[in-house]
Structure formats: structure tokens, C-alpha cells
Length: 490
Image (cartoon, rainbow, N blue to C red; front, side):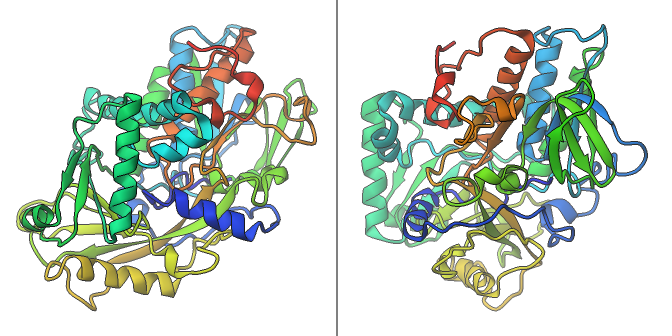
């Protein structure tokens, strides 16, 4: 099973998805496996970008493990990292005086991820407040801000900033219509009244944005970063292997799709079936995001996790970097997002631009799992976008240097599902005992997948140690798969 955990990150699409789910209410079958021939992504297919691409795809398969993680995106690798930290701290029980065995199984090449690292800060605060109350809404936003700071701290502390192309340029949202600005200012005021720290938020008038960026629209500037996601996740995987030395043994098998999971016939609980053989394990973590319903059919349809195809182009600017921008951007109520890659010398920047799903009405690319193809309507929209927003900085009619698609996982609530696998037909949870899930980020995975994976790893460690799981006081209880989990905070 592969995972495009984040796929193309679409900063403000959460409200749009909610409306479509309510209108369609379609019942669909389980997701397919990831297609074996995905479109070529700038992130993945640039030379030397993916040294772990084929890791473990040949040779013997790890056939016995304590934990089987399905999916090698940011969720799967983050779960492995947090388990390695738990092992380092002695929070995983010793097993017959040997290290804990953790295996990551990936259907395709290692880590088909994209995106940038920008928390929402206060966007849609009123929506969260209405759904969950002020305390839980504040947790949702604290989690993203906390995660962004933690990931940047890891990157800098490990000396990875150059390796992963970390850019501290902030994030700018353009308001192409008056209603967008009014709605966001109302969210800002509600978040400020609730006590969220917003001193770094800066509102720009149309004139100020024109002077600073050459764009004739009002805007708001927020904290944010961009980076090369695959390179970061590669480094995180290697750190997890290093952390686990002597306490946790971590193995990766790419090109090894999990086709089904059954009860194991040996002392382990579960058997993960692949074309290369069976992996018997005591615990399973589903880090499969959009593809979750392939192995968990009860998650198919509008009440589960909806595969959603996003599209991205990499296009060259017509002006040098000093005439462009370092920040990441979004506009059109979040349907389009973009940011420039770091450049050397006089090279004109390559800009990553994603979005455009709004032209594919009425389905907005929901229920699509084929990322081997691009949608020509979406592609045409993306080609027009930057020249129209930045006149003179992007030439009209120029073909992008690359174009690709990725599959995101959306939920009706737009929030992830985190915790034990639960089927309403099995309310006691015995059917999936020992299986966990963290998935359904609704196009907003970079600031959410890492902490959600941490919570799942903590649940697993608590279960293995026979101690109660405690919900972190920064984690929104609404993200949990079961209300019974929210018994106490730490």
C-alpha cells in the first residue's frame, strides 16, 4: 500500500470539500491500490532526489515484526520515528531481550509526498469553534503551530536545513474577492479573542501588496516555511534507524504493496499479505491516507476517506529571484498554492504551483486514485494562473517543465482520523484489535501528519506496555477515532 500523505498541499480547500460532500453523498467502493506507474513528480524524479526509492524491493522480505507500518509517506515515517524515540526512552517493553522489530511496507517507490510547511494560524477558526468549542478549536491550531516549530527545530538541530532546502519565507494569502478578506478577518478576530497569539500576522492593503510583490490585491502575511518534503522524510527515516540502534530494528520494503490483512496463523496477531510473501506482526499502523479503504472497506464512501486527485506544475519564472518572492502563497480561497524553489546565481526560479480542481466541476476530482495521468482542464487552468496574477513575471503560453498528480485523502469533517481502527459494525473494537490509523488530512498534511503519527505511536506503546493512553493536552479530541480514548490529558 502506498501513500501520498500530503500530495499537492491545498491550503484553504477545507470549506469547499465540505459543501461537495454534502451535495453528492455518493456511495463508492473501496479505493484501488496505488497505480504502479504514477506521473513523474519534480519532488521524486529529480536526479538523486530519492536514494531510498527502491530500498528493500529485492532480496528477502522481513516476515516477522512487532509493528507493520503500511505506507512510507510522512505519516508512516513519522510513526517509525516516534516509535524509535519511545524505544530509546525505554517506553516500549523489552521483547525476549531483542530490539523491537518495525517494518515499513510501501507499494511503490519510497515516499511520494509534496507540500509546504505552513500552519493555518487562524484560518477557519470560527468553523472549528462552532464544531468543537473554543478549547478544542485552540488545540487544533496549537497542534499545527507546535508541529511547524518542532519540525524546524529538528531540521536545524540535525543540520539538515541545506539538505532539505528549508526556506523561512512565511506564507502570504491573496484575496481575489472582497468576501475572502472579510471572512478571514472575522476568523482572525475570533482567534485573537480566544487567546491565540497572532502578533506575527500582518494585513496588507492592495497598495502595499502592489509595492512589495507587484500584485494588485490585498493580502495577509503569516508564518510559514517551505522545503523539499521527500528529502526531509528521507532524513527522518535515517534518524529513526539511528535512534533505534539496539532498541528498535527498522526495515523498509518498497515496491511491496499490502493487498490484504488477515488473522495470523502464528503467535502474531496479523498477517499482511503482499505479492512477495506474508509479514506476520502484532500491530499494524495504516499510514495509507487516500488508499485506506482498500484494506479497510468500511472507510469507503462519504463517511470515510475520499481519494482526491490534485495536480501540480513546475514552471519557470521570467524574472530573477530578487523580483519574485521567498514566501509560499495561496489564493482563490486556497484552491491555488505556489512557492519558488531556492536558486543559485542568476538562475530564474522554478515555481511549484498546485490546485485548479475547481474547474473540474461538479466532482472536484473526488474518488480519483489514478495519479498516472493529468487532467487537461486542470492543467490549462494552472498554466493561465501565474501569468494572470503576476503580469510580466511569468510568460503566457510557456509549457511547465514538469506536471504531475498526487492523491490526497479527504474526510467529510476535513479532519484526520487518528487512533485504533474502528468499524461501526464492531463497536467493541475486537475485529481490528492492534490496528491503528492516521489518515484523512484533506490536503493539509504537512502540519498535521507528524503529530497525528506521534499520537498513534503513543497509543501503540501504551497498549504494548499495558498502561493507559493519555491524550496530549495539545491534541484535538475530535480527531480521535473513538470518544472513549479522550479520558485524560497530559
